[in-house]
Amino acid sequence: MWRPDGKKIAYISTESGSAQIWEMNPDGSNKKQITEIEDGVNGFAYSPSMKNILFIKDVKLDKTVNDLYPDLPKQMHFSSTT
Image (cartoon, rainbow, N blue to C red; front, side):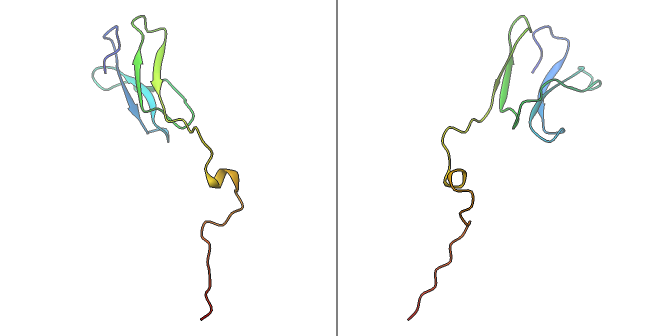
């Protein structure tokens, strides 16, 4: 996506290990990471003034069984006697 000022192209890349917002010149030069959001982002948009960036990311709302009981084995083995 083009920045509102039309000078750079913004995109999401996993080059740094997680999905972050990057910018580059229209010719592909001068790539620069502009965010370091924990666990990465899924989408984004600039404010018209470019003073703010709105980003979308996954947020975990509820704890899983593994969060509640981290010592619980991943698999339980049952033996049957017949």
